[in-house]
Length: 276
Image (cartoon, rainbow, N blue to C red; front, side, top):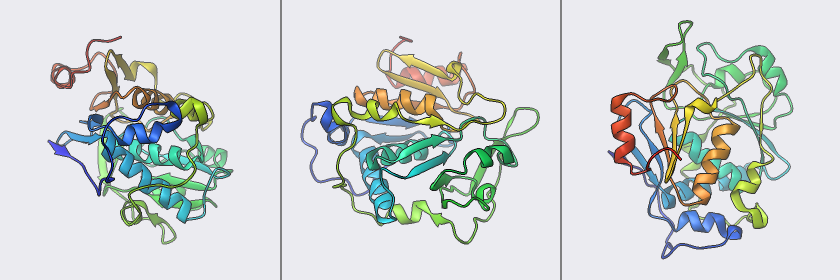
């Protein structure tokens, strides 16, 4: 098991209540907020505190690079713990979000998708070579390999292409940011779920991103079949609703429910209960 941490915020005694304090409430929680089995290795866990720490650092980087509420960010990331940490940070920064969504295809997205995303000011992607010619600022979120789907629908891993010279290495830069964020808190009385109402999916050939059969809503959390999919609005909004309730998001290496016996055992061990 891997339990991720960075430099945690100093305060965290007790859970902060009230939707206006949604970020403080998450940061005060020592309970799991994200559990990731989908990376193909160990179980990775981020508590609410650690997820909020990543979120604060991400929001600070966004602000330091000159972006804010008037910025539109295009998110083209596979479903893993990193993309969920990025999601929280972008929400904390109050930027507008558009998701590429859809399967993570070998060879990158179609040119028509790129054309549809021309209005983006900033792109966060695990496949920076696919966006090298896009006029937006480019941040790469790169773990060293790119997972994709081949023509037979099977998940494959391939070496990541070298990023363009102008791309910002997100994982390097974000670690240098402060652990706490002092930007005005977006969301108002509706909190984090209220922000999600304005998020969008990029109009793409073939339409749908993550379908509902990938989501298993449980009594005490959300289980997401993450294999071969990008983060999209469906998962993003479902995730923030869980965090707003103090419940975890569990990513599993499946394409849809019902899950395999091995995954079912893992989900049961997380204590998220039966399907709601």
